[in-house]
View 1: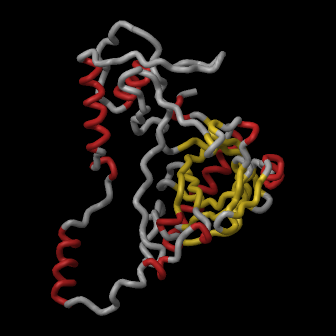
View 2 (view 1 turned 90 degrees about the horizontal axis):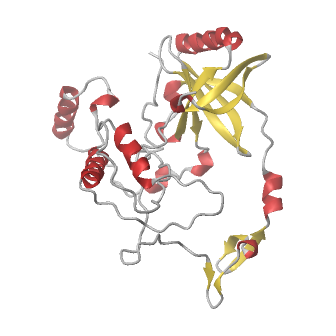
View 3 (view 1 turned 90 degrees about the vertical axis):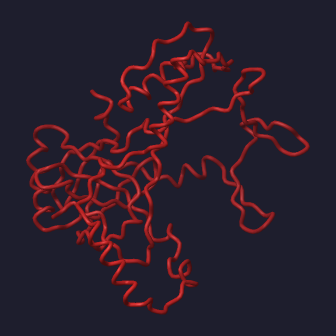
Length: 305
């Protein structure tokens, strides 16, 4: 199976007595950004972060406990088994509880998208029926899904007419700051009408359909070009890497070459002779999207036309 279609979760999309087998595929790219390690320039060793206590030094893993600060200086300790007991069992179902107009969901509630695919030929008919019904009614399904022991609020909507379904995890209302408090210091008086009219005219002249492919991440492109240039000049340094026995080591050069190739920059220059182990490049998270005000009733991401 291609990396781009690797299944993240399998289960059932349930509406009343109807259950449709589905699987989720992450919509975000796993390697959308190059990440760096800190290295001691002189010793050529990776810099590690130690967990230490003042006056004691490094603390063993088995002696570390999670603490919740209830007031300054006073904590409640949480043991691993106590936290594990709070985790919800995975039911492998996405229960659709209600349907709403897309405009009712403010953009800042959306958190992380997943593509939803039918799991098997038998599931495809029911999948298409639900997809087309949501599109025809311009509705979004709201439900709950348990992932890694935690219950998530989710929204289900069609990507477009005749296309697939997308599931987006939503933030709970309690996770967001009160926008009224944040914007309370902004003046309430109306600006001059002629200035507003000028702004409206400018907005109208620059209005066009949204095409995300037109926008580029110039910093990421420049960074990859810099990496590519350094590889071409042979500017690689062997860095000592402490690896646990049996752990898989990913060659740093190979990881960089994959990142350059994934960015559309073509093949990277030939790899210089190896001089030692390279630091592995961990998968990077995609930069978070810009968020809008909770108070401002901006239209949500709407797939239905």
